Length: 405
Image (cartoon, rainbow, N blue to C red; front, side, top):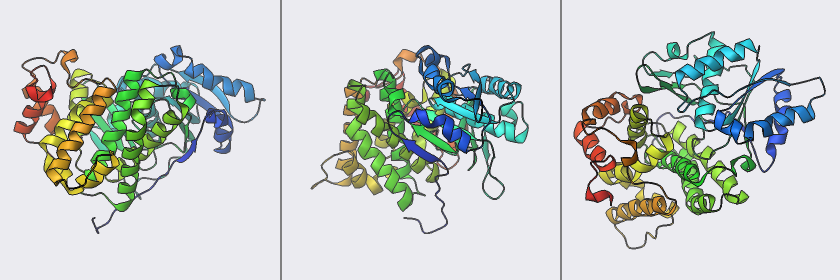
């Protein structure tokens, strides 16, 4: 455990439970909101989730307090900067003074970008992140007085509470990051009812996103007792609930626990942020080949643990226990092997692929991929050598070896 400076904060108040979405208008009113815009995506609009939330305002509105003045659903995968900019423009056209995000990580990150842009008078979010990473810390970073509530509809990214917005730059084909202690939502509403219709495949890979956050937090050289506590509980709750959430999506208790695990996992990750090789690879592959982030993390996770054992061995006993692996009379190396196997077994049980063969990654793509991994902001603290990136790449694309079978 490090004894040098660290910080840990949870700026977002969390409201959890079935039907907690009914509280949203009153919560916004308590934050001083007058004109709120609801941001989501077309898939959630088509699924009826957007209308479920919007209807609450119609049922509770009496001409005073918070009003829902607009709904914007043109948000793309990975919070593309073009759709972020359109959303910024829409918020201004609606004279919005408050923001309501309802969706998965792309929606939640988009709204963080809107919040940052409105506060700083920006029309193009790319100008906020010219080098790929904009990292603000207190006291330079000050409170952003824009009422903001986030309602996650997937259990994985935890973006509803994280101080990080990942935004895709279409021109450069790279995922960029804004890190700011006050861009997270004032409040998060974790309503498991809104996740009941999530398809099994998406439930599976978003769940593995939460697991990846927790494992990378646990293995971080800058982990603390605070982050370890959140990381380990995330892993325990994931192991207990992921299969049930995938196979029986109507299980409200499993859905609730996965939402809470997601929130805790990203909290650990955000405040232990240092060596994140799984995310480094996932960011690059996601940007280049449009692979959903949680799925990329899921595929890379066992390979990275197996191929960079030194990063995971110091706490492998804790990781194994949290994954419900028997640790008695086993060496650290044996435990690492069993952890990798447990992760692969869970992936198979929930129907996740072992590689990216369905994404038609070109045979000659490795030089481009290596450059993308090494230039991603996630490589800053833990750069991966080209030989390792190539070896992992051959395992996960259609050049896969027998080690992935």
